[in-house]
Image 1: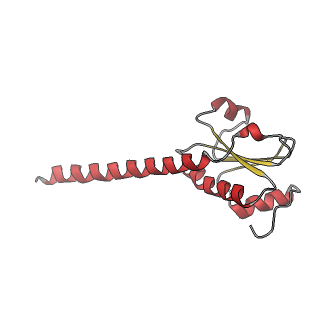
Image 2: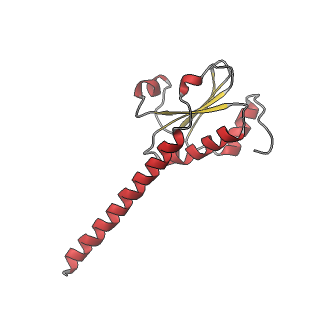
Image 3: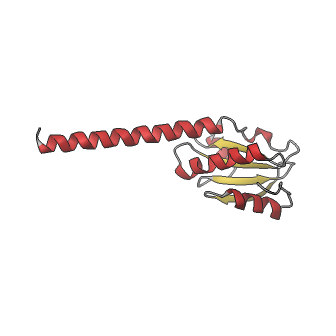
Length: 139
């Protein structure tokens, strides 16, 4: 086999593996967000942490497990997810220009704080505390 042909074959395998890996991560991310409600829960009597993101966005995919973990560990506030690709009008209404965006809402649905970029769990809980929402200790 000629060296040029072998190099193209290796390149093709590498590209196929990368595309497959990206597709698998996108499926994992979209599956996890399927368990989170959308922004329709705002103003329902509980504070809400809303993530606006997209499945192709690496920091957004990194944030999703944190959101799911928070949803499973506590009942003081709700977590929600809105895909900006599927809801561009809503994203515009929220003034999103970069993702991921996490927006903290009070129980009446009023925006209290927003953060752009990945936000670690401990920082999210600290922010809720600053906003006067007492989250359970130990999470």
